[in-house]
Figure 1 (cartoon, rainbow, N blue to C red):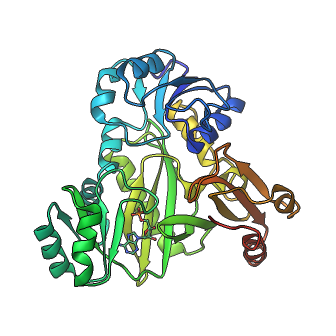
Figure 2: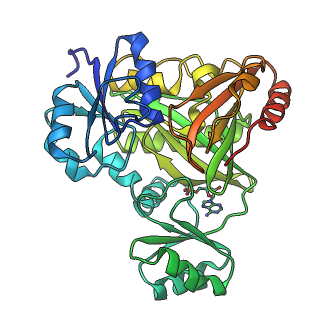
Figure 3: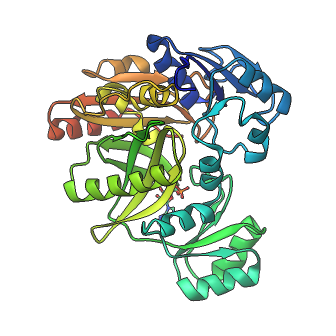
Length: 368
Ligand code: AMP
């Protein structure tokens, strides 16, 4: 595989992450083909797309036949669906990494094995188990589905014993995890890339503001040398352990000056979108470089950046573009409440100026 040029990338899922990967690939001569259910999906607007189910064996086979390497916009594809392809095409990141990240409990077990602190938690499979977990860990706590939860979906915050039955009524099914609700001072994330030869690069630490479980905005670099070193050490442990190839992210809670891992994403990450304009090489380009065996690019920030998500609707383009140095990203999606439909990035030479510009821009954005 080493000597062969990898330049055709098959991407499973054609959401905005895939779209930004494909766009980053073009200047490098990398061509993407997607597999997605929708013919109007964000990725399908910029590259050829096979239309159908993401785990359809025939379509996955066709995607593999037309590609030199397979990668993912959607990380929930099962190892079983990928198994027939292993051996015939490079799958990056490896299916085993996807499988661990698909299950919050497996993910926490991996973190624990690698001596990365996690939120106190218990697996819950029935109402009695939920009662036991709340007795052990107390309130408040968060009940989450182990699989297929994202952006706060499949989660319920329990404030006291009176919420136990309600939480069970809403989410009740085997395959849950109850976590202690942490009073964190901040949420941060680290995004980095690993090459096939094991070289690892990472971006500066990013501070993230969520509401209702959904990322609203990020600022980077979040300057804290101690936490950044720690986040880097943890990311390196995970990437090495998984023999990872490509970009990945880990989200942390900062509690009492310590990092508590919340979850990992085996893919490019929303908190790394600022790198398109704010770093020498974007996370999307570095993902494409990593999976195509090209040298990884510099992750050095080129200033102080803020990225704001557009949720539910796109803000007025004309007003936003009038802001000095603002980069506007429309994902080409239909507006729908809570949906990530685009983002913008602003960059300034000084952190204080970035913060002022962020505050002014936030006034023009309405999340619905
Ligand atoms: P997740 O889907 O696990 O990334 O959760 C989405 C967001 O919900 C996080 O970024 C936090 O803002 C919040 N959250 C999730 N779990 C916890 C927890 N155990 N304690 C406090 N906040 C949490």
